[in-house]
Image (cartoon, rainbow, N blue to C red; front, side, top):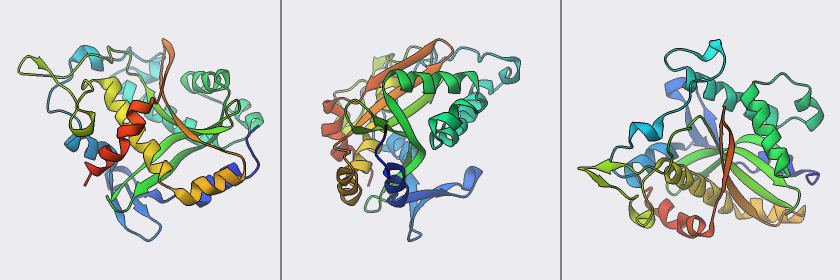
Length: 251
């Protein structure tokens, strides 16, 4: 079971929040400083200018007639993300008794199998120096390791995730600190997770408060969910070591 007060610490120490809706939505600090989104900054400064093949971007048609038609996969992914975020902060008893989409239920079952207890969704992290902000899709507690886990959640993406972007017939790599990594869907998502994880780890006061309640470390997990099942990828030291330089590229 997660330490008492963990959720309270994470809520009270969040360095930014999402304000506004739709195209006007943005992250800003408690002091009102507007922040740029991480995804667009990665696209501009880390991802190559190559094009990822359609086979890598393919997603199986969502189950259920409600999600059929143009944009069905995106609508379903948004609905699942919102539901997971809302239910993550509930007790296990309340969450189990709540109505869930099939994919949402699959995600929480997968987390339970990995001994991960959801604590909250959409926890804001930022760097005011670099003027960027984002949110961890899920923050969980690892009961076995007694640690915090930042989870990057991706719905769909059932295509060939390791198929590299190509430009002028050649495979592309990511740029800067990640130049040794192929520019593919998996590595783009891993770069996003690495940066989100690093931004949380920069919160020294937060880490100190977590240590006081017995949470000793922070790790990362990339979780893909689709009708074929769940696939998880741990955030490896290679990505963690390069995250500070990736952040420097965001300026």
